[in-house]
Image (cartoon, rainbow, N blue to C red):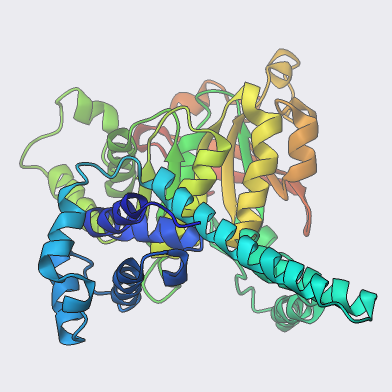
Length: 431
């Protein structure tokens, strides 16, 4: 059951026109050269994958030169065939559809081949029914095993990782085993944000959730020299645009008052402009990616994260923020994404109004859909103003409470941070 030649050509054209993104999607769908029915398309896809794995640019010109070097160009119909493939595809918008079509037809061909073989073997059956059935099951499994990812591993692999953590704890070096938050007291309690963990940061509106998350992203992707390697970080911003996030991060790092900047009260030739320029140069070199698509479903978010991970191995994902109506559905999906990509996922969420009405410190039950988050989250952090300092909180430097309300593998407790409201920045607490 061959896929149409046009479907295969569309996939190859998208790989050439869209580059690494479409190739990553092909690899995510587990396409191989054998997934293509037509021999010349098999050769083209094989060459594309090899260029991608070598880190070389995957373009029409480079592919043609590579095929020519291998003396395969004429075998696939020469440069005219390559032009024919790319010339008939005006857009890569439907790449996903055609990738799935190629994968689907390949799977059906393999099933037909296996099933036909099973029928022929059944007609020639001479005894040993259990062994015969077992062999047929194995043959079918070989066809279908690439439909799902490997999820089970021997316990010894997990024990090795656990022993590494135990060794660091016993040596009392205070060495982080996860991604730093940038806050020494929080890192001392958590040893950093750990792989496969979902960390929920919850607060009432305008309490600084986004600022806290951006400060963490900066600490992870822009560590102090000699302290750690930069951690590639992906931010899903469901409310603010990437430009707005960039402005906040620039002002926070350069310590420039964002309100004065917006009001045009910052001198064009003052030290603030120089500080902003220096911060901009630093951020240009950081491995921070921002996706500001709105109304993303959890499935779309996970698919995007997989594709980005395929070309840049991520170490941290931040989701800003979890809407009330989505909490129960999405929290489970985000926890699954943390496990699948083997990295920490930080999710911002809102608290209900109970703590404000009752003038008390927030607790787990104040989370929207708290049952779902309590079940799925490994760590729950809550930002709060000290109850007796509402007026003081409006000054330039303020005390903020950071409550570690839940930590599956560590202690809970209250910490204090310093919040610099004029530059939307949290820092280690100082008296």
